[in-house]
Image (cartoon, rainbow, N blue to C red; front, side):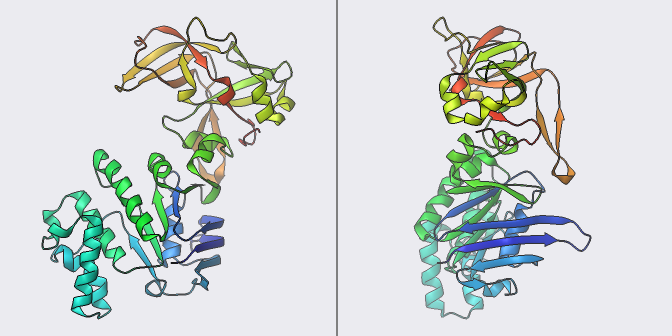
Length: 385
């Protein structure tokens, strides 16, 4: 087992495109590190540099105690699981799993033993004599993992291994992958564009954008303490609602559109810098789960009046899409890592209890959990704490 250490990693292609910028990251022994971000953010490039499939322009990459920048992929003691399984169609499951061991010229008995042990971990024992075409997508992915496991590598690298599976199987396989990784205790780097996958699987999650690491933390800390509005909007499903707002009355009152919310003292205890924004504009982040249907006991100063535009009944909850007269803030991925702010009517979504009777077109009032609001500087996009 080993750690993975990235220090100031850069990747610049011959055409001048700077794909990865000065990336530093540590993955401890046994840790499951997820790299997540929008398409083109550089996460797969980072994984390929660790694997040795992409040259490193500058910076140091260590696996264990060794600097491996110039070490061949086969000598890095890693195993990689790809999105497309990459199985040999003419070989049985057993032969696919044991192929790397055969190349090492290990004795047949030892190969068979290691293959059977991996098959038992993965629940593939009864399929060892089948060909890949006779297997389901989930079984094929487990075969691909089996091929990695038998090599007993120091490091696992996984590049969107579940993206080809249907939604139900993908949820099941998330738990399977984590169970296997925890049992083996190997440092793992896992790439996905699916932030739900990242949040449910990662010990820590690294959020990338335009080749830059924005934040690396536990899933809960990313959710509660995003470093900027991009991370705040990217982490969480449905995404955080973002609006232009204005603070006044010493930062105790917040205006969104034509409506005013009163901020409790706990907000200022958690975010003391917020008071310095009194009389200024801020970007306000409201998570869908921080809104609920108002009642007669709702505290004054915590209510937003909106109009429902679409209601999605999901059984355990309602997703209520709504509009009101606020200015919505949208973050677009554009070149040069700039943020394009688009303004329009105050669109949003709330996750509420299914017992509430609501349909599109209804006017309704939401109680806002004001202590859970997020605030961002409108110029820099950085969180205000």
